[in-house]
Structure formats: C-alpha cells, structure tokens
Image (cartoon, rainbow, N blue to C red):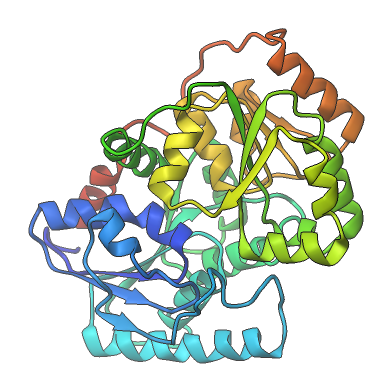
Length: 375
C-alpha cells in the first residue's frame, strides 16, 4: 500500500494533456509536495507552464517543435520512430527516479508511450503503479478518431490503475478488462477543475464581447485529411447567422489553403478567423459564447462545464455522455440538417433543460490525489 505523500511522476506530451493534468499539479504544489514532471516534447509548451502556474518540466525527452504540433496530422516513419524511442526514454527516466506512481493522461502518442514504457511488460520488477487518467473512452471505431482510439486501447491494456471519467467509461473498462487484474476507479474528469480554474483567472484579464457570437474549433486529423469532409464543414459554418470567432490551428490553416477553401470562408463576413488563442483566452470566449461548432474532444466536455450547446463536426464521438445532456449534437457532417440546427439555436427555438454534469463537480482533482495516496 502506498503511503500518504507518495511520489507521483506525471508524463505529458501535449498542451491538451497539460491542461487536464494542471489541477493535479497545482494541488500537489499547494500541498508543498514533490512531484516529477516529464515532458516528451510532442508539443511545444513554451509559456504554458507560466500560464497555468506550474513548474517547468524536470525532464524533457525530445526537442519540442516550434509549431504547435510535431507531426502535422501524419502517422509516418518519423512519428513511429519517435514513438518507439520515447517508450525507452520514459522507461529509463522512471527506473532512474523510482516514483510510486507514473501518471499519464488521455490518448496521444505520448500517452501510449508512457503506458508501455512504465509497464510490467518492460519492467518486470517494477515497484511503481502505472496510472491512466481519463481511461475507457471509446468511439467504437479505430479510425474515428485516428490514431487516438488505438492509443486509448494500448494505454488501458498496459496500465495498472484505470481512472474512469464517467459511468460510460467505467462500463467500457469493466467489460474489456474483466479477465485482467486492474484497479478501475471512477473519478470524474479533471477538465471540470481545469476549465473552472482557468475561467476564474481569465475573468481578471478579459472583457466580454458586446455582441453575441459563436465559437468555432476545427483540427481533427480525420477531417483535415479529407477534402470532402472539409467542404462539408465549410458548408456548415457558412450557415452561421451571427458573428463567429474561429481561432485557427496551424495545420487547419495549411489544409484550408491547400484545398482552396479559404476563399469560401471569406464569403461569410460574419466569420472572424484569428490566430490560435491561449487556453485562458479560449475558455473565456467559450464560456461567454452562444454556442460552439467543433470537432475536438475536450471542447465537448468544456461545453458541459459551462452549459453551452456544442455542434460536433464528426460522425462518431468517444464522449457520448454529452449527447445525453441535450446540449451536445453529433451531426454526422450532414450539412442541411446541421444548418437547420444552427438556425434553431440562433432563433431560440431550442430550450435547453438543466442537467447534472456527468463528468463530476469542482474539486475532483484533489480527490484523485487522495485516492492514489490511499491505494
């Protein structure tokens, strides 16, 4: 049994992982506890640590890219070589530092590398437990989203402790892991704490927009790589009748230019394309928007935190909890139906009932640390 005050190593590759691990790190810092921050270098974190009030990484395992993503929506020889090398770099650091827990979040290449690198398969005499935070998400398709669905399955397979975010994810894990000795614990989703902490800080810095607006976010690989899908997405966003703010990812802008679709966006004068926002600014915009149009995963969860309708530009989602809330809508990329939905939302024809967030309430990150200390 681990003692209270156990040493936790947190492996992070992307800014999205940092955002969701941030409440745990802040809580550990508030408790004046030592913890290890291992950065794989998959994304550039640049000023993110200062932005979130957490320490800089103790270990950086590869040179972070200048752009916001290392692999530009591609799974190729370079990315696979990086992944395989990262497994053994993580293994080396964990063996050197001997923490009580190795914690990693989500569904990226860094997540899978951390799960394998810290696993019993590569460390038969290990003394630590490998912990997958946000375990059990499933869309039911290996290619929606790709490669995240594969990474989730790998991470859950190689982990010792699986922290589920909801009834749905716990059910998935108990069904899949029934013949394996795993600890499965439903903890809720740390995004609840991340979003609320960030919004409270953002209110001190930003002012609300005077006019109503929608917020757009598009970056999923399976959409960007398919010109037919991107044409449908542009058809949908051109149906927006109010002002729309679209912070554009580097790779999204690249594909829009390559496909010749930028000029289509410019036909709708309501759409304001901006550089990518930092998380604090983005959450402030999200919390004060009328509705969201997005293809990401975390934004579906954030929409529930702030009670904002979210139009999901996908055919499948690994986060069906939001669909049951009545404010998340899976479009299947049906242009006419989605434009009608936008019109109804803007016209006030849809009435959104109150709901209890399936991902939990404020303060759950503190409980996660208590759970680990008590195992």
